[in-house]
Amino acid sequence: MLNGLSTAWSWNPISLLLILGVCLLYFMGQRDLKRRDPTSKLPERRQLIWFSLAIFCMAVVMLTPIDTIARTQMFLVHMAQLVLISTLAVPFLLLGSPHEMVTPLLEKPGLKQIIVSLTNPIVASIIFNLTFLAWHLPWLFSLTQQYQWLYQIELLTIFLASLINWWPLVGPVEDVRGLSYPIKMLYAFLDGLPLEIFAFILVYSGVVLFPLYHVPPILSINPYGDQTAGGALLMIPGLIDLIVMTPLFFRWIAQIDKQALIDDERRANEAAAREAEEGPALGYVYVDEDESEDAEVHGVGKGIATD
Image 1: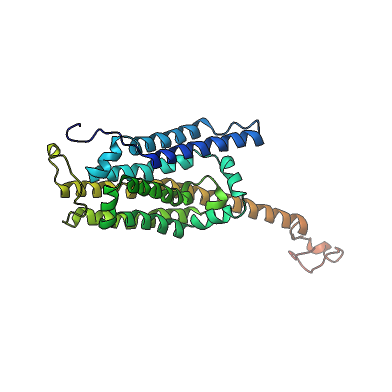
Image 2: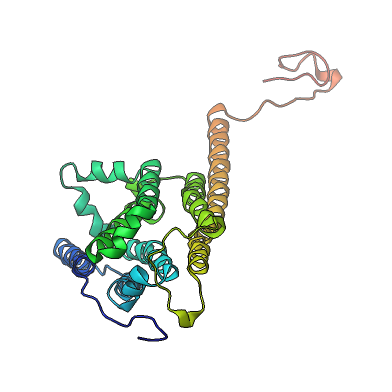
């Protein structure tokens, strides 16, 4: 015990299998990529770093005493666990997965259509928010606190729902997500609203929703204070959404400027092509009045336009 907090390492087979399974799929994808293209240098170093950070983050919060504390002692730690999984580990995992490693999976019959359907922005947002909120219904959450295996299933399903939820923004296959920048910004904004409402309920309800937590007395935090702190922490994903929206906005502006330059160049080329087809523009021939009778022009008098 450390200041009343558990230091017991629990046996979490579901979480362990999840992490090992992710690593196995990643390195099998890397091996298949090398088979198809022996000269390939993917994944790049930065992608390996993203992937390693994702696995490290998952291992720390799912396989250490943090998991025991999150389930039995402090709601604040539980929220920190979920925020780290859904807001850091999952996007890091997607950023670390090269397009070329994921594409062969989509070539399997029917699999691409399933992924496209699940990662539709509306469907992905509904799946994630319903999964997260359903597990935090007080009666269901009390069961996860009592049964460790059920708590591990909660973490597994939230991880998978987060994977679906992040794909429209940072998924490695562009033709699957394929959203415009304005739609991505709208998605990032609306997607976090249900959790922010839940966070406000946790902070301002004045009622302890999860009474089975046993906060160590030495920490001088009452159950409602623990719940309030957890609710405040749950607002962090909303801040992450704003951080994600900022570069999307500037990329959108850059895309508009680039398209404007392309359109200007296209219009200039079309004008030049028309001028080349029509020949030189009509001009004016000025003749002397004394010689106008002898001049072979199409017009009479000074300053008349001719061919």
